[in-house]
Amino acid sequence: MKQMDDCQPGKAGRICDDYRFRKMTEQDLSDVLAIERRVYEFPWSETIFKDCLRVNYHCYAMEQNRAVKGYAVMTVAAGESHILNICVDKSLRGMGAGRSMLAHLVEEARRFRAEMMLLEVRTSNRTAIGLYMKSGFNEVGRRSSYYPSKNGREDALILARVL
Image (cartoon, rainbow, N blue to C red; front, side, top):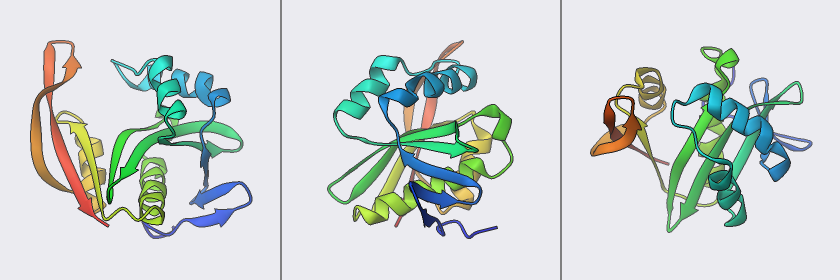
């Protein structure tokens, strides 16, 4: 198993473990939206993803055996990287796919000279919080009632990592 930040260049993107990462395109959106809707109770819309692509956010597709199995959206500006969305298909949960996706984002943020990486995560998402903490993130704040939930709103933890 490769180290957290040890992604290798491939013919058409970076390879971390058994996953290949490349820039997301509009042609990926049907696969991305299918995963988004399977995983999230309150998924992003197609319009949100198209807007992210249009304004040149750092949007990546993660492939395994040429099938899109995950994706991420990140911004990088003024020395900071902000992960807006990171998701892997339920079929890959617990198999290192999330760790590999995060490793790719760290490498990309460094490549674009970010010094800090930030993200928000639902307080109820213990699995993701565990992954982020094991990957060097620390809690730096909380956003009250940030996410929609079945019972109204849910807080978000703000996590940060120095790169």
